[in-house]
Amino acid sequence: MPASFLSSRLSPFLSPKFLKFCAVGASGVLVNLGFMHLLLSLGMRSSYASAWAIEVSILSNFAVNELWTFRDQREEGTVLNRAGRFQVVSFVGALVQWTVFLAMNVAFLWWLQGVPGLDAYFGGSEGMFQTYVQRPILAPPEVGYAIYGSQLVGIGVATVWNYLANFYWTWRAKDEEPKSD
Image (cartoon, rainbow, N blue to C red; front, side, top):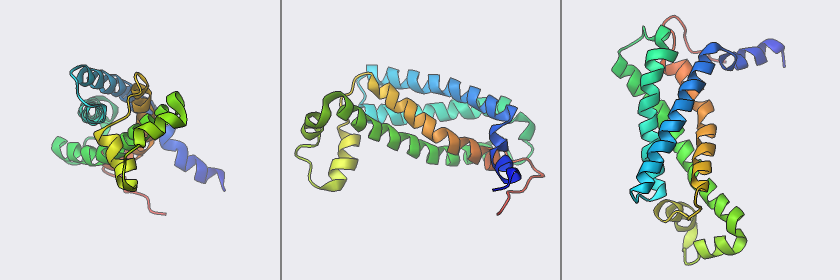
């Protein structure tokens, strides 16, 4: 593998723009976790609180990225056009983050309570869909403060997708065409 191939693939991550994106993302993490904490304290189910917190942080991140990170690349389209593209990109990232959140809650249950905890949690479920999809959404396991760890792991996994898709599509420079290999 030539060095130029690897360098071209890593260049978006070795830039001041990526550092700005990460700074905005860090503020988004605070918004995400803070809003999730608020919703949980109001009694909302953790799976729903996570989903709403993700969306609020998406809106916050768009505003800051629009005004700061990618302000030099705002020539193409309107702010509503970019907001729509950002929302599409973020929807994929949100699905990734939320899926990881749900899976990590089950993993934390196993870590905290072992196989007996999993057996008790999944007991009475019928079929794979009800066991592994419905139950974590409709009756998420109680894992205490580990839910914040689940949210953080989901954020980390979704960050790579979000940055690359936004770098190459949402705020793509007007004279830059997507590269096809």
